[in-house]
Length: 277
Length: 316
Image (tube, rainbow over all chains, first blue to last red; front, side, top):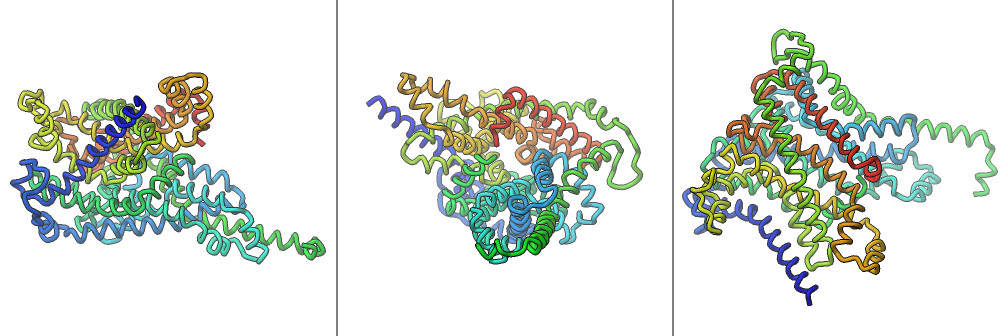
């Protein structure tokens, strides 16, 4: 009996905490449908569904919402592709191929994780200026891609995964005369879908949310990403909360969608990668 | 198989030799692009940072060699001292909070309770969402007329009698603590998952033995579970601290580039941002970056020492 009451209290506490965690997100959605004068009445729901805020951000902001969304998506997708290509090939080489210097080089890859971005920012910025990539020209995006092209953590995850693919598979293919490159494209990649999904989701989420590098590298409003746009608009909108919250909702939406569809997968993969680290 | 043994040894070794060479070349070419990027943008850039930090380095014009003056100058600037103090205070408070919260959530969610998958998912989501989005909605919640004060009011708190009149983010006494509250909440989800991963790796037989010896739940937690989580504590606290000392997003969103009000949200990284991108003192900014690196590195080593070398190895 005592045990049951304890369980009930625990359940209640967890439910309350998840409710409290949910309120801020709910509040941003609710506020985005309110009128400006309604915001601080602090009613739970808007008096009626009001799309003014969405119309406002869709038509009246510069850069346009379309631009911000497109930039964020474009950058995130290119970075995901780069991480997949560079991470999987390097991870495969470190896991399955024998060549001189392999282990030393892999330790160097791990070593880069010790260097914080904030230390790199000044020299990287100066280097990018010298390369002519800090400008209002679209080549400005190349600067972001260059910095974000490769992730040590992804190489680590791919290597870990390829180490666990059974040797028999490789041996069978080798007897058939398959070389190392085809081994990668025909045997390894088709067997690596879970890790490809993991790296894609982690990279997409990290890049979509990133504020630090875009706020330093992206020079013209036309290149801003959604998080950077939110930072910049905060000064302008100040008291006009519904459009601000509409932006917040749209910036959270893609992540929320991915999370809703792949929530179990994401939790399990994070659990898995946490053990390995 | 028999056919293979009958083949003369020489051609085999030659073909094996060719295969090994092919494997080497494939290996090197597969890692060439990432290693080049790392060599230039991670290691080379470190040397470049040290080089830059010793100059008066503007965006244009002649550079003047300063030696270590950028470093000594930094400690004479009261704003920088404020930034160090804020960053350290923030880390000192947010790390224990998010660790304790993450550990508690992990222990609760790990017990066989109904809906534990649902709870995991909801507790983790704030860690997934964009810091810009969460901080902006946090600012709305914390404005004097916002929901937070409404809830306080509901519980009988007289807002206008509060020492800060409910101006949580625009009063320099409470701004940093508000951000601490926000980030302890958002980061605890990640910490929960780290603990959860390690909890699931714990052999249940320890607990069984303790139970038959008559240990109660608290004793099991105190003397078995928590000590077994030592590698996880080390990992969570170290990564938490490294992340905390790099506070930037929430500070610039809530306090602007000056870390307003009154520099209460000025952090070391925000200070670097100001030095470089508002005052164009890149040499000075690089020097601060190196100081931050030394700080993070020595605190990580100190923690390794505190936790003992076994915890360090236990991470693998």
